[in-house]
Amino acid sequence: MRVELVTVGDELLLGDTVNGNAAWLGQRLAEAGATVTRSVVVGDEKDVIIEAVTTALQRADAVITTGGLGGTYDDLTRDALAEAAGVALIRDPELEARLRERVAAADQVLAEMALRMTEVPEGARILPNPAGSAPGLRVELPAGVVYALPGVPREMRAITIDSVLPELGAGPADVLTVRRTLRTAGLWETVLAARLAPVEAMEGVRLAYLPEPAEVKVRITATGPDADALLARADKLTRELLGTAVYGEGDEGLDRVVHRLLAERSATVAAAESLTGGLIGAELTAMPGSSATYVGGVVVYATRLKHELLGVPEGLLAEHGAVHPDVAAAMAEGVRDRLGASYGVAVTGVAGPEAQDGHPVGTVYVAVAGPQGQPFVTSPSLPVPRSGGEARAPIRRMTVVHALDLLRRVLLGMDAGPWTDPSGHDREESG
Image (cartoon, rainbow, N blue to C red; front, side, top):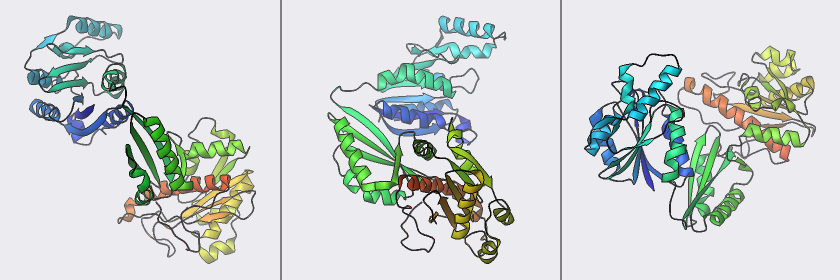
């Protein structure tokens, strides 16, 4: 089943609203076995909507629209679909009765304009909306079928799950499509793709790379009568080729992996943060129950606080400044000792927009101290945008990822990672 998406709304074109509906639909349709071949955004113009839908049906088996089904004059999707189908809009008495009941129950007065939500193209099938007032519509056009859904996310999702996916996900019983997403840290998308060439060459297997700061999700899709077995082989080969870069799968982020590993060892962690300003602590407290393994953190942005609060030697700070591998190591040991944790993780560096003490933007040191003795220290190679002002957010986010991944590696007894040691030797491309 080939599906195209048409999202309707001036607010989407102007950037006032992020098009989250298309992203959600793409994920759910893929999980159901449908193939999304195109997604477009159009404004609140009837002729434009008609053109987008009819053109899409020349290529796809079905089209899903979102938006334009409300009760205001700029909600024109139902009008566009009626004109494209060559039928009239008619008021549905059951929809009207239900709308009046909803408005009365809320102790509100029904505006005449709102009755537009009870009008449907003649012959269309109404898709019940359990989360709101505007129903979805299934409209047969000469070239194919259109599923029209409200733009309100919770309403769109409810109708999709109840009415759309059961139809679009149905396919030949002997042809299956299954997917799995592996999560990796520390390697560029291009490095991953080069290593995974043997997986790309497997018949019936497709790979998709979903990059995020310092992370890349690798989605494996297998199609065919033996899709489950094919997916298992592709998954196994992918893990072999990527090795320790793979840290999890599905929705399990690095924070959950770290908490799980700490809990398995009855261990705890504390964080000392300079350039990240508390982002590591925020990441490690996002999961319910995180207090069992995360004891707390110290944000030491000013250089003097690294000495006063964490015990970093004054001589070390005076000689090298705050951005140095030995400073990161001392911070990790200091926060571990002072907060009584099993492990201490620390970060220091230059997030921009300007260089600091001769260190360019993107210079970062990450350290983990634990019961093993000498702290592990790495200096990840971070890509830096040309504009230093644009670098801060991604550098800070990448630093969080590298810090958690180094902690993961230390907990598992792995090598320190595919980055660079503080001396600058053996650097491998990473992100």
